[in-house]
Image (cartoon, rainbow, N blue to C red):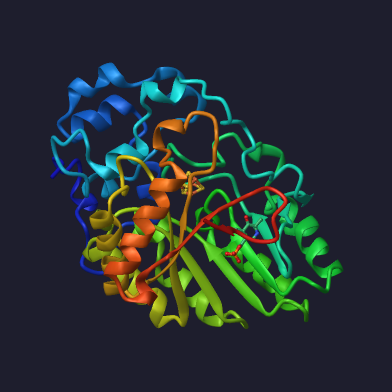
Length: 342
Ligand SMILES: *Cc1c(COP(=O)(O)O)cnc(C)c1O
Ligand code: SF4
């Protein structure tokens, strides 16, 4: 447990009535690595932190997520996902700035076209949490967000290409935008007959479940398409009662919930951790979708699990769980027509 800085940071039973405003909780996120270490009782880890890594990609983590970390455990799987360590400064061959070929697949401002029938919108560069392994940590967000200029260029691109059936809101985290901004986009897309599905990729219900508020739910309910919602949880400990409530509300609004995880050394690189993640996700009404091999992005090499080990873990997982709880083990390869199974 962390010492409660303010009563508003205690998990609320219901994120609606009297719940703290998500924007305020967003602003109050921990941004100072030393404060984070103090909150989890690990001041001695300061010696292993990297100011250079924190300057390149600053620490950011909502206090509710910090509260789910185990106090005094330097190997906590949630802490490891957010703490800027000196390992990030290591230069490793094969780890570059654009590991997934986003630059080549750019179709317009904030629009990435890689796979048939789907257009991915980099809705915004902002995230509530900064994940150290993120493949977008070097992405030139300033020029590249689809929400800039009222989504005009992105909507025009989608409208002009009748092969696009599905629009994927990604980022950054698209739910870091105000709901009114999302509604602006959905209204414009609703006028395009060939768009028949909407997908949202967001980590916010996991790291800041207060984001799933009445306004967001009303927007989701009113959308003219079935919505697939792809969460991002890497470890069972990321779930708690408040996350469960947020996810139940999303399901109640007619949203289909899937999870994608990244296979990460020191976070979820064991059969037990992966099986617990699938089981915990299912208990919250979420189907495992993808288990991604790490994108080889500069500063993330210490998170990598070699392919052979990844395959062995995946085989062991399949031998233990029902088929519907086994995510597909994939890697993103630039130029491929879809995620590549390992
Ligand atoms: C991953 C990805 C998608 C979605 O792929 P699915 O296999 O349908 O989940 C779409 N566009 C881009 C650019 C992607 O990287
Ligand atoms: S895009 Fe997703 S993985 Fe990357 S920092 Fe944001 S929330 Fe984390």
